[in-house]
Length: 283
Image (cartoon, rainbow, N blue to C red; front, top):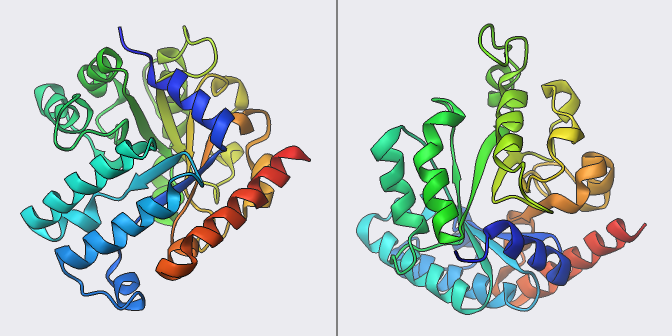
């Protein structure tokens, strides 16, 4: 069996810190960089982001949608970016947010998690709208290849609050919020892990986990992908307060606040934010 994603992630967090650079080639950022909104512009932008991240952080998270909007040419660029990032010894989370049932979700997983695939990443984001059990095939696929998953639980966008805090009215998790039940089911998947399991959850830095019924005891072995830092409102210096006992499990994603610095300033800004986070964690 290959080394588990959880073990690889734990090593990266310990050795290179908990900051993750989101590679998000928004059209407005391409304009700010004076690049064309074309596959070529996306390629230049993204490869420069990989170059800036290499040696500064240990994890990158390309947002698939910003490549996909350019069709097949965009996917060709994404394949190149994924390969460049993994070749630079960066752990790569494909932010694809796929979700379905049975053979369909297994096919999504095969695209992103199969060694040798042109879209190979180390982990991918997935949606459990049809239930965590609907992801069983892709969970098994990820485990067999030493890959990881991050399941949406309590996301940082305000439109999700009503659904994610809704109470379930039947089954094992009756009376629990949707978000808390997802976290608990993931906790069960990670029960045999010594430190970190290979199935994580997304819990935004701008949400109060208590309001979602999420407690630390169900996250002790679970990786947490945390969007919301920077322009969305959360600050890296507050990360220990936001995540409490499970702070060591958190991957703090930053994006626009770094990318706005441009090709020349991006690495310096990324190093500055990495140092801000290290100081916060050392307090």
